[in-house]
Length: 402
Image 1 (tube, rainbow, N blue to C red):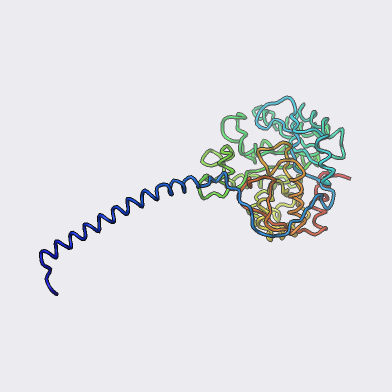
Image 2: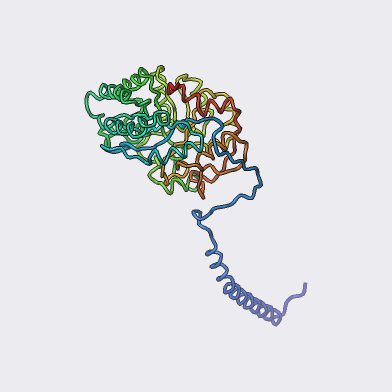
Protein backbone atom coordinates (compact mmCIF):
# COMPACT_ATOMS: atom_id res chain seq x y z
CA UNK A 1 0.00 0.00 0.00
CA UNK A 2 1.32 3.46 -0.92
CA UNK A 3 2.26 5.70 1.94
CA UNK A 4 0.29 8.92 2.39
CA UNK A 5 2.17 12.15 1.77
CA UNK A 6 2.02 14.98 4.33
CA UNK A 7 -0.15 16.94 1.89
CA UNK A 8 -2.57 14.03 1.56
CA UNK A 9 -2.71 13.61 5.32
CA UNK A 10 -3.43 17.30 5.93
CA UNK A 11 -5.98 17.29 3.16
CA UNK A 12 -7.71 14.32 4.85
CA UNK A 13 -7.83 16.15 8.15
CA UNK A 14 -9.32 19.18 6.45
CA UNK A 15 -12.01 17.15 4.78
CA UNK A 16 -12.82 15.45 8.10
CA UNK A 17 -13.10 18.82 9.81
CA UNK A 18 -15.38 20.10 7.08
CA UNK A 19 -17.47 16.96 7.41
CA UNK A 20 -17.74 17.38 11.15
CA UNK A 21 -18.76 21.02 10.72
CA UNK A 22 -21.45 20.10 8.23
CA UNK A 23 -22.70 17.33 10.53
CA UNK A 24 -22.74 19.68 13.53
CA UNK A 25 -24.69 22.31 11.60
CA UNK A 26 -27.09 19.64 10.40
CA UNK A 27 -27.64 18.39 13.98
CA UNK A 28 -28.18 21.93 15.23
CA UNK A 29 -30.72 22.46 12.48
CA UNK A 30 -32.40 19.16 13.35
CA UNK A 31 -32.54 20.08 17.03
CA UNK A 32 -34.17 23.40 16.18
CA UNK A 33 -36.71 21.61 14.02
CA UNK A 34 -37.47 18.75 16.43
CA UNK A 35 -37.76 20.85 19.59
CA UNK A 36 -41.25 22.10 18.63
CA UNK A 37 -42.17 18.54 17.62
CA UNK A 38 -41.11 17.24 21.03
CA UNK A 39 -43.11 19.97 22.71
CA UNK A 40 -46.14 19.14 20.59
CA UNK A 41 -45.73 15.45 21.43
CA UNK A 42 -45.55 16.26 25.14
CA UNK A 43 -48.70 18.35 24.88
CA UNK A 44 -50.49 15.52 23.08
CA UNK A 45 -49.85 13.02 25.88
CA UNK A 46 -53.13 11.90 27.43
CA UNK A 47 -53.54 11.68 31.20
CA UNK A 48 -54.80 8.30 32.38
CA UNK A 49 -57.70 9.97 34.15
CA UNK A 50 -58.84 11.44 30.81
CA UNK A 51 -58.64 8.17 28.90
CA UNK A 52 -62.11 6.93 27.93
CA UNK A 53 -61.70 4.44 25.06
CA UNK A 54 -64.69 3.32 23.02
CA UNK A 55 -64.81 -0.30 21.94
CA UNK A 56 -64.75 -0.99 18.22
CA UNK A 57 -66.28 -4.45 18.66
CA UNK A 58 -69.57 -5.02 16.87
CA UNK A 59 -71.34 -7.40 19.23
CA UNK A 60 -74.89 -8.11 20.30
CA UNK A 61 -76.40 -5.71 22.80
CA UNK A 62 -79.42 -7.15 24.57
CA UNK A 63 -81.67 -4.82 26.51
CA UNK A 64 -83.10 -6.46 29.64
CA UNK A 65 -85.44 -3.87 31.18
CA UNK A 66 -86.97 -6.20 33.78
CA UNK A 67 -85.83 -9.24 35.71
CA UNK A 68 -87.17 -12.51 34.31
CA UNK A 69 -88.72 -13.23 37.72
CA UNK A 70 -89.66 -10.88 40.60
CA UNK A 71 -86.36 -10.26 42.35
CA UNK A 72 -85.34 -9.85 45.96
CA UNK A 73 -82.44 -7.42 46.15
CA UNK A 74 -80.77 -8.84 49.25
CA UNK A 75 -78.13 -6.12 49.51
CA UNK A 76 -79.11 -2.45 49.59
CA UNK A 77 -78.39 0.58 51.75
CA UNK A 78 -81.56 2.63 51.78
CA UNK A 79 -80.35 4.18 55.01
CA UNK A 80 -77.15 4.52 57.01
CA UNK A 81 -76.84 4.08 60.72
CA UNK A 82 -73.76 4.55 62.87
CA UNK A 83 -71.21 3.16 60.42
CA UNK A 84 -68.09 4.28 62.35
CA UNK A 85 -69.51 6.87 64.71
CA UNK A 86 -72.34 7.65 67.09
CA UNK A 87 -75.70 8.72 65.73
CA UNK A 88 -79.14 9.03 67.28
CA UNK A 89 -81.17 9.55 64.11
CA UNK A 90 -81.50 7.36 61.03
CA UNK A 91 -80.16 8.85 57.82
CA UNK A 92 -82.34 7.81 54.87
CA UNK A 93 -80.72 7.96 51.47
CA UNK A 94 -84.06 8.20 49.65
CA UNK A 95 -87.80 8.05 50.25
CA UNK A 96 -90.08 5.09 49.56
CA UNK A 97 -91.85 7.27 47.00
CA UNK A 98 -88.58 7.59 45.07
CA UNK A 99 -87.60 3.93 45.33
CA UNK A 100 -90.88 2.08 44.71
CA UNK A 101 -91.46 3.23 41.11
CA UNK A 102 -87.98 2.03 40.11
CA UNK A 103 -88.64 -1.29 41.81
CA UNK A 104 -91.90 -1.68 39.91
CA UNK A 105 -90.33 -0.89 36.55
CA UNK A 106 -87.37 -3.23 37.13
CA UNK A 107 -89.45 -6.08 38.63
CA UNK A 108 -87.81 -5.89 42.05
CA UNK A 109 -90.40 -7.33 44.39
CA UNK A 110 -88.57 -6.70 47.66
CA UNK A 111 -85.48 -4.88 48.89
CA UNK A 112 -83.46 -5.74 51.97
CA UNK A 113 -82.10 -2.65 53.71
CA UNK A 114 -79.13 -4.16 55.50
CA UNK A 115 -77.94 -1.08 57.41
CA UNK A 116 -80.93 -0.57 59.68
CA UNK A 117 -78.88 0.22 62.77
CA UNK A 118 -79.71 -0.64 66.38
CA UNK A 119 -81.69 0.76 69.27
CA UNK A 120 -83.65 3.90 68.49
CA UNK A 121 -82.19 4.19 64.98
CA UNK A 122 -83.35 0.67 64.11
CA UNK A 123 -86.86 1.43 65.28
CA UNK A 124 -86.93 4.61 63.18
CA UNK A 125 -85.69 2.75 60.11
CA UNK A 126 -88.27 -0.02 60.44
CA UNK A 127 -91.04 2.51 60.94
CA UNK A 128 -89.94 4.45 57.86
CA UNK A 129 -89.42 1.59 55.39
CA UNK A 130 -90.77 -1.74 56.56
CA UNK A 131 -93.96 -1.01 58.47
CA UNK A 132 -95.65 1.12 55.77
CA UNK A 133 -94.59 -1.36 53.04
CA UNK A 134 -94.09 -4.78 54.67
CA UNK A 135 -94.27 -6.63 51.37
CA UNK A 136 -91.63 -4.43 49.68
CA UNK A 137 -88.96 -3.64 52.29
CA UNK A 138 -87.14 -5.73 54.91
CA UNK A 139 -84.74 -4.22 57.47
CA UNK A 140 -81.75 -5.84 59.18
CA UNK A 141 -80.22 -4.79 62.48
CA UNK A 142 -76.53 -4.19 63.24
CA UNK A 143 -74.32 -4.78 66.30
CA UNK A 144 -74.03 -2.02 68.89
CA UNK A 145 -70.23 -1.84 68.68
CA UNK A 146 -69.95 1.32 70.77
CA UNK A 147 -70.83 -0.80 73.82
CA UNK A 148 -67.96 -3.26 73.39
CA UNK A 149 -65.95 -1.71 76.22
CA UNK A 150 -68.66 -2.55 78.76
CA UNK A 151 -68.07 -5.71 80.81
CA UNK A 152 -71.51 -7.19 80.08
CA UNK A 153 -71.32 -6.53 76.35
CA UNK A 154 -71.79 -10.19 75.22
CA UNK A 155 -75.10 -10.47 77.09
CA UNK A 156 -76.14 -6.96 76.12
CA UNK A 157 -75.62 -7.68 72.42
CA UNK A 158 -77.47 -10.99 72.73
CA UNK A 159 -80.45 -9.19 74.23
CA UNK A 160 -80.31 -6.64 71.41
CA UNK A 161 -80.82 -9.40 68.85
CA UNK A 162 -84.02 -10.47 70.58
CA UNK A 163 -85.13 -6.85 70.88
CA UNK A 164 -84.43 -6.22 67.19
CA UNK A 165 -86.58 -9.16 66.18
CA UNK A 166 -89.41 -7.87 68.36
CA UNK A 167 -89.20 -4.57 66.47
CA UNK A 168 -89.44 -6.42 63.17
CA UNK A 169 -85.81 -6.83 62.03
CA UNK A 170 -85.37 -9.91 59.83
CA UNK A 171 -81.61 -10.43 60.05
CA UNK A 172 -78.23 -9.20 61.30
CA UNK A 173 -75.77 -7.22 59.18
CA UNK A 174 -72.01 -6.96 59.78
CA UNK A 175 -70.09 -4.28 57.93
CA UNK A 176 -66.35 -4.74 57.40
CA UNK A 177 -66.05 -2.56 60.52
CA UNK A 178 -65.45 -5.84 62.35
CA UNK A 179 -61.92 -6.84 61.45
CA UNK A 180 -60.82 -3.57 59.85
CA UNK A 181 -62.08 -0.62 61.93
CA UNK A 182 -63.47 -1.64 65.33
CA UNK A 183 -60.78 -1.41 68.02
CA UNK A 184 -60.62 -2.37 71.68
CA UNK A 185 -61.49 1.18 72.75
CA UNK A 186 -63.90 1.48 69.81
CA UNK A 187 -61.71 3.84 67.77
CA UNK A 188 -58.28 3.26 69.35
CA UNK A 189 -56.18 0.36 70.51
CA UNK A 190 -55.71 -3.00 68.79
CA UNK A 191 -58.18 -4.13 66.16
CA UNK A 192 -60.92 -6.49 67.35
CA UNK A 193 -60.77 -9.80 65.51
CA UNK A 194 -63.76 -11.17 63.63
CA UNK A 195 -63.68 -14.40 65.64
CA UNK A 196 -63.42 -12.63 69.01
CA UNK A 197 -65.22 -14.79 71.57
CA UNK A 198 -67.24 -11.84 72.88
CA UNK A 199 -69.42 -12.16 69.78
CA UNK A 200 -70.16 -15.87 70.16
CA UNK A 201 -73.45 -15.27 72.04
CA UNK A 202 -74.53 -12.83 69.30
CA UNK A 203 -73.95 -15.38 66.52
CA UNK A 204 -75.83 -18.00 68.52
CA UNK A 205 -78.71 -15.61 69.20
CA UNK A 206 -79.07 -14.86 65.48
CA UNK A 207 -79.29 -18.58 64.81
CA UNK A 208 -81.76 -19.17 67.63
CA UNK A 209 -84.04 -16.44 66.29
CA UNK A 210 -83.61 -17.73 62.72
CA UNK A 211 -82.16 -14.42 61.59
CA UNK A 212 -79.62 -14.80 58.77
CA UNK A 213 -76.31 -13.02 59.23
CA UNK A 214 -75.19 -10.91 56.25
CA UNK A 215 -71.47 -10.42 56.73
CA UNK A 216 -69.01 -8.29 54.77
CA UNK A 217 -65.46 -9.45 55.41
CA UNK A 218 -62.32 -7.92 53.95
CA UNK A 219 -62.14 -6.30 50.49
CA UNK A 220 -60.54 -7.18 47.13
CA UNK A 221 -57.04 -8.52 47.55
CA UNK A 222 -55.60 -5.51 45.72
CA UNK A 223 -56.62 -3.28 48.63
CA UNK A 224 -54.01 -5.03 50.77
CA UNK A 225 -51.13 -4.60 48.29
CA UNK A 226 -49.04 -1.55 47.31
CA UNK A 227 -50.73 0.99 45.04
CA UNK A 228 -48.19 1.04 42.22
CA UNK A 229 -47.99 0.78 38.44
CA UNK A 230 -48.62 -2.97 38.54
CA UNK A 231 -52.03 -2.67 40.17
CA UNK A 232 -55.00 -2.99 37.81
CA UNK A 233 -57.14 -1.20 40.40
CA UNK A 234 -54.70 1.71 40.50
CA UNK A 235 -57.25 4.36 39.54
CA UNK A 236 -59.77 3.12 42.09
CA UNK A 237 -57.30 3.22 44.97
CA UNK A 238 -55.58 6.37 43.79
CA UNK A 239 -58.96 8.09 43.92
CA UNK A 240 -59.77 6.53 47.31
CA UNK A 241 -56.48 6.14 49.21
CA UNK A 242 -58.42 5.60 52.43
CA UNK A 243 -59.63 2.29 50.98
CA UNK A 244 -56.12 0.85 51.12
CA UNK A 245 -55.24 -1.53 53.96
CA UNK A 246 -51.61 -1.92 52.94
CA UNK A 247 -48.63 -1.31 55.23
CA UNK A 248 -50.60 -0.62 58.40
CA UNK A 249 -51.69 -2.72 61.34
CA UNK A 250 -54.46 -4.43 59.36
CA UNK A 251 -54.67 -8.20 58.98
CA UNK A 252 -54.16 -9.64 55.51
CA UNK A 253 -57.07 -10.55 53.28
CA UNK A 254 -56.42 -14.24 53.97
CA UNK A 255 -56.34 -13.73 57.76
CA UNK A 256 -59.67 -11.92 57.69
CA UNK A 257 -61.29 -14.61 55.57
CA UNK A 258 -60.03 -17.39 57.81
CA UNK A 259 -61.27 -15.62 60.96
CA UNK A 260 -64.76 -15.45 59.44
CA UNK A 261 -64.52 -19.12 58.51
CA UNK A 262 -63.81 -20.04 62.12
CA UNK A 263 -66.99 -18.19 63.14
CA UNK A 264 -69.07 -20.18 60.64
CA UNK A 265 -67.50 -23.41 61.86
CA UNK A 266 -68.25 -22.61 65.53
CA UNK A 267 -71.89 -21.71 64.82
CA UNK A 268 -73.30 -24.34 62.44
CA UNK A 269 -76.93 -23.51 63.32
CA UNK A 270 -76.56 -19.91 62.19
CA UNK A 271 -77.01 -19.12 58.51
CA UNK A 272 -74.32 -16.81 57.12
CA UNK A 273 -74.70 -14.89 53.88
CA UNK A 274 -71.19 -13.93 52.83
CA UNK A 275 -71.62 -10.66 50.97
CA UNK A 276 -69.71 -9.68 47.82
CA UNK A 277 -69.10 -13.38 47.10
CA UNK A 278 -66.50 -13.52 49.86
CA UNK A 279 -63.68 -13.46 47.32
CA UNK A 280 -65.03 -13.04 43.79
CA UNK A 281 -61.52 -13.15 42.31
CA UNK A 282 -60.87 -16.62 43.71
CA UNK A 283 -63.90 -18.79 42.98
CA UNK A 284 -61.91 -21.94 43.68
CA UNK A 285 -61.41 -20.81 47.26
CA UNK A 286 -65.08 -19.83 47.66
CA UNK A 287 -66.08 -23.25 46.30
CA UNK A 288 -63.95 -24.95 48.94
CA UNK A 289 -65.70 -22.92 51.66
CA UNK A 290 -69.19 -23.70 50.38
CA UNK A 291 -68.29 -27.39 50.34
CA UNK A 292 -66.92 -27.16 53.87
CA UNK A 293 -69.65 -25.02 55.51
CA UNK A 294 -73.26 -25.99 54.76
CA UNK A 295 -74.47 -22.90 56.66
CA UNK A 296 -72.73 -20.56 54.20
CA UNK A 297 -74.41 -18.72 51.31
CA UNK A 298 -72.99 -16.05 48.98
CA UNK A 299 -74.37 -12.86 47.45
CA UNK A 300 -73.18 -11.11 44.29
CA UNK A 301 -73.56 -7.39 45.15
CA UNK A 302 -70.93 -5.07 43.58
CA UNK A 303 -69.00 -8.08 42.25
CA UNK A 304 -70.31 -8.66 38.73
CA UNK A 305 -67.27 -6.68 37.63
CA UNK A 306 -65.11 -9.62 38.73
CA UNK A 307 -67.57 -12.42 37.97
CA UNK A 308 -68.27 -11.13 34.49
CA UNK A 309 -64.68 -11.25 33.28
CA UNK A 310 -64.45 -14.96 34.10
CA UNK A 311 -67.79 -15.99 32.55
CA UNK A 312 -67.07 -19.68 32.04
CA UNK A 313 -65.87 -20.19 35.61
CA UNK A 314 -68.78 -18.09 36.92
CA UNK A 315 -71.34 -20.09 34.96
CA UNK A 316 -69.99 -23.36 36.36
CA UNK A 317 -70.04 -21.85 39.85
CA UNK A 318 -73.68 -20.77 39.49
CA UNK A 319 -74.60 -24.21 38.18
CA UNK A 320 -72.99 -26.01 41.11
CA UNK A 321 -74.13 -23.68 43.91
CA UNK A 322 -77.46 -22.53 42.49
CA UNK A 323 -79.25 -23.19 45.81
CA UNK A 324 -76.90 -20.95 47.80
CA UNK A 325 -76.50 -17.88 45.63
CA UNK A 326 -78.44 -14.66 46.26
CA UNK A 327 -79.13 -11.70 44.02
CA UNK A 328 -77.98 -8.35 45.42
CA UNK A 329 -76.63 -5.07 44.08
CA UNK A 330 -75.21 -3.17 47.09
CA UNK A 331 -77.33 -0.29 45.77
CA UNK A 332 -77.07 3.10 47.46
CA UNK A 333 -79.47 5.86 46.43
CA UNK A 334 -77.36 8.87 45.45
CA UNK A 335 -74.20 6.85 46.00
CA UNK A 336 -72.30 8.86 43.42
CA UNK A 337 -68.90 8.10 44.92
CA UNK A 338 -69.22 4.46 43.83
CA UNK A 339 -70.84 4.29 40.36
CA UNK A 340 -71.11 0.49 40.51
CA UNK A 341 -73.59 0.94 43.38
CA UNK A 342 -75.77 3.89 42.36
CA UNK A 343 -79.38 2.84 42.80
CA UNK A 344 -81.31 3.27 39.57
CA UNK A 345 -82.68 1.61 36.48
CA UNK A 346 -79.31 1.40 34.70
CA UNK A 347 -77.76 -0.53 37.57
CA UNK A 348 -80.45 -3.22 37.53
CA UNK A 349 -80.35 -3.56 33.75
CA UNK A 350 -76.61 -4.31 33.86
CA UNK A 351 -77.14 -7.04 36.48
CA UNK A 352 -79.99 -8.55 34.48
CA UNK A 353 -77.88 -8.50 31.32
CA UNK A 354 -75.05 -10.28 33.12
CA UNK A 355 -77.32 -12.97 34.55
CA UNK A 356 -79.75 -13.51 31.67
CA UNK A 357 -77.78 -13.02 28.43
CA UNK A 358 -74.60 -14.20 26.79
CA UNK A 359 -73.71 -10.70 25.59
CA UNK A 360 -70.01 -9.97 25.33
CA UNK A 361 -67.75 -7.16 26.46
CA UNK A 362 -70.06 -4.64 28.10
CA UNK A 363 -69.72 -2.20 30.97
CA UNK A 364 -70.27 -3.45 34.51
CA UNK A 365 -71.27 -0.04 35.89
CA UNK A 366 -73.25 2.94 34.60
CA UNK A 367 -70.17 5.17 34.37
CA UNK A 368 -68.02 6.80 31.69
CA UNK A 369 -64.94 5.11 33.16
CA UNK A 370 -64.92 1.64 34.74
CA UNK A 371 -64.76 2.44 38.48
CA UNK A 372 -63.08 -0.74 39.74
CA UNK A 373 -60.69 -1.51 36.91
CA UNK A 374 -60.36 -1.02 33.16
CA UNK A 375 -62.05 -4.14 31.92
CA UNK A 376 -65.48 -5.18 30.67
CA UNK A 377 -67.65 -8.20 31.34
CA UNK A 378 -69.53 -11.03 29.65
CA UNK A 379 -72.98 -12.42 30.38
CA UNK A 380 -73.39 -15.94 31.75
CA UNK A 381 -76.86 -16.69 30.32
CA UNK A 382 -78.41 -18.60 33.23
CA UNK A 383 -81.41 -20.87 32.53
CA UNK A 384 -84.77 -20.08 34.09
CA UNK A 385 -84.46 -22.78 36.75
CA UNK A 386 -81.35 -21.13 38.17
CA UNK A 387 -82.57 -17.57 37.64
CA UNK A 388 -85.66 -18.26 39.72
CA UNK A 389 -83.52 -19.48 42.62
CA UNK A 390 -80.98 -16.66 42.44
CA UNK A 391 -83.53 -13.88 41.96
CA UNK A 392 -86.03 -14.99 44.58
CA UNK A 393 -86.27 -18.49 46.01
CA UNK A 394 -82.98 -18.70 47.92
CA UNK A 395 -83.48 -15.35 49.65
CA UNK A 396 -87.15 -16.08 50.37
CA UNK A 397 -86.17 -19.28 52.11
CA UNK A 398 -83.60 -17.56 54.34
CA UNK A 399 -85.98 -14.70 55.15
CA UNK A 400 -88.83 -17.16 55.76
CA UNK A 401 -91.15 -15.38 53.36
CA UNK A 402 -94.45 -16.96 52.41
